[in-house]
Amino acid sequence: MDAFYASIEQRDHPEYRGRPVVVGGTNGRGVVSAASYEARRFGIHSAMSGRQARQLCPDAVFVKGRLDYYFDVGRQVREIFQRFTPLVQALSCDEAFLDVTGTIRLFGGAASIGRQIKQEIASELQLGASVGIAPLKFVAKIASDLDKPNGFVEVPVDGVLDFLDPLPVSRLWGVGKVGERKLLRLGLRRMKDIRLCELKDLQRDFGAWGEHLWRLANGIDPRAVVPDREAKQIGHERTFAEDVSDDELLRSVVNYLTQAVTRRLRRGGRLCRTVSLKYRREDFRTFARSQTLSRPSDSSDVVYHTAIGLLESMRQREPRPVRLIGVSLGSLVAADTPRQLSLFDIGPLAGGSFEPGVETEALRHLDRVSDEIQDRVGEAGVYRGSSHRWMHRKKN
Image (cartoon, rainbow, N blue to C red; front, side, top):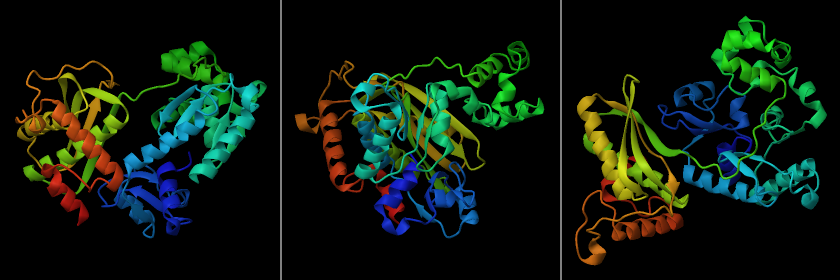
């Protein structure tokens, strides 16, 4: 998808169309999650600080991200993919590999399928997409990026090396800025330069990484499209406009983040085994602590009490002002994984009282009702009282 988050905002807000739009970085301290192509012309890109983005383009429209909503749209995009093939390997909510070799007789050649997908995304979702078609996964990925936005690049089976040879080495999977500098120092600027190297020389200079680059530059990539690739971890975090030392406010933020991430967990039909807290001090030193749950869970209450325990431990060890807090859930498993409830499975619905941090049927019911209300009226419709301070602060 093309500038996915920003394009959704431009679609939903006609007044933003044609203007530089930046998702995230709204308070100057946060980071940019996405930038429209109009904003990219000013040098704005994801992971840039909001303050720098404003300096580059003071007239840009800065909007708060709506991650749950973007993921919903991403699911709609994947539903379109799955009309044409069951072999869909999602890389993120806005990018995927499709293997259409088994459905060509139904829908026409790969190019025809690619154009049909683009057309259906445009007509049904009013969003642009770029398509890359190739016999190899990494070549298709490169092709999809070459002519954005709204691109369409097809690489024939007998044209892979002709396509790759003139491209810069930075286009290869696994070549970042540091790797690119190492290659450039050896005079390896284009993929053809790597292809013509002796494999043993690249192995001598770079080890296994050198062999990896040589194989890709020679059009060797046996990896198949693997459908239903599940996320290993999901999380939410917040960067504060001002450094925070107030423990009550930090607990409120952790509660808010817990509700957001466990809602995503339940909507994705997953349970988590681990809870992690990310903690960045005002001097940018970052720490993380994790705890494994006694049994897989998707309970907001269980995750909240676990995260709060991690927060309190971190505050004792690192009591300095906080710039960023994040809550993430890992070791994810399917929601139908057997779970053992507490022997004391009681709560208000059963006339008893909750045991903090212990999952009960009553808490499950509370989560279901909360999710249903938020689906209808948004996150402000219902939320836990202990997150009120942060929710109220967000509005002002």
